[in-house]
Image 1 (tube, rainbow, N blue to C red):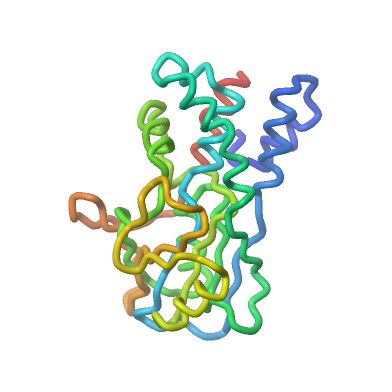
Image 2: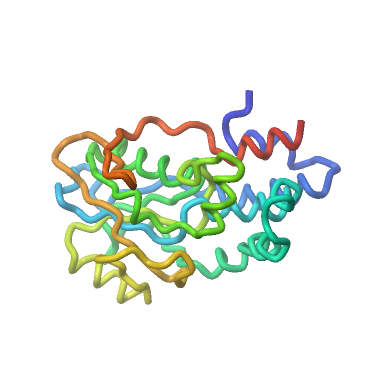
Length: 242
């Protein structure tokens, strides 16, 4: 059973089908390294800020529109699908902070890649032991991603992203200094619009003294984050390669 994108890529990268080969080469570029912590032997302080750059599920949105537009054409305008297929240009211009944790950098950095933001948050807890509460209403996500995922019954927070980061800061001043130094707009009080500039950093939650990983939903209820399932984009890839 294929449950990881790297396995899918290895099995299909040599395919004679140019669409599958192109799809796999793009995915292989998006599978980034694991995160790091500035002080790996120290726990993150409760009340540290958890911020995000980029947009949830954007890479998956691009792959669906570019390589499987037939799944969308009967529901969405052609121009919307074509625009989504060109999202790679937006992703290439998004901030891509490297994870060399030295000097004036966040306390911890986690790429948002395979399995989406859920996996990055799970890794944050696993590597630091820090619990947290995340306001799901503050996670940056494009309206196109929301609509495509609702149509295909996919979870965008468990879907491939690229050039997106979860970053932890020990204070507001540290976050503001980092944003200013990297030409990022720091959204600390309100959620940026879904079509906002890719050069944004949004406060999405904080670390807690409790080890629980809480996700605060749109209706005000809270749920625990469990180990993420296989990436949602695999449901599309495997169904269409069958």
